Image (cartoon, rainbow, N blue to C red):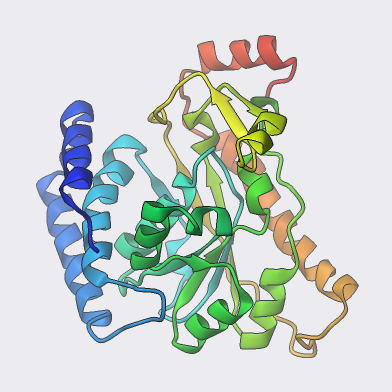
Amino acid sequence: MPYNNREKKIGSYMFDKFSLKLSSEDKVHKEEQILKLRERYRDYQDPWGFNIDTVIEALNLTFPIYKKYFKIRIFGIENLEDKPYIFASNHTGQIPIDGMMITTAIAMEMDKPRVLHSMVDSFLAGFPFLGSLSAQTGSILGDRGNCKWLLDKGESILVFPEGMKGITKSSHEFYDTRQFSNGFFRIALGQKTPIVPITVVGAEEMFPLVFHAKKLGKVLGLPTLPLTANILPLPSPIDIYIGKPYELPDHMSVDAQDKEIRVHVQKIEKQINEQLKNGLEKRRPFFDSVRKPLQDFLFKKGRS
């Protein structure tokens, strides 16, 4: 079912606590984008429970957070056309707020907005409330068949090729990308869908001091147990860079050997890593005078 009163109360508390009121201009923009989304998805249905009303409820909550709390900056939105893509992003932070902010950007920043369907891990999909909510807002289990269904319908998907390893990094590992898997590239080949590299900078600072207790997490039935200095994410400024679509090689088959595909996956990974380096140099300061020396002291390794 769509958002209930409990979630609305939580949203109201956050708005009051952190002054997340939108400007008049932003309110008008949000309503214009929502009207476009309602029209686009008026007759859309999927097998997993997509609900445009729930999507709108979610955007009413996330857009003020996007604008006022994380102060998102978007670079490269002009690289996108109104057609299906596979968005491939680095994974940052300890909870999937990066995915939430990317999907909000695609819904709110494009002239012809769309709901971006995030591929989620079975771990999240199995949660009673979160699994249902993610399905209603367009997220689905990261299965090739599911991806094919969406791309055939003209939808776009968001993947994190690092997988769970991308958000299970301790503080001294922030912005060290893990090796990308090949699966998303095979899906792109099979559906002839261009890949858009996405780079997120600033989300790691939401939880500046993190240690992952992996053994304890396994005891509790979790992939890992993050231990952090703060429970709620801090309002770290976040930048999202949208790269130019990576055109697929015409000659390559979906059944190509892994070593052939690996060459292209590494090119995408390199592009994201290069943008990470550039983005970190332009990152807006966030308590750097305290955060960085403390990280250096605790982890014996700092990143700028």
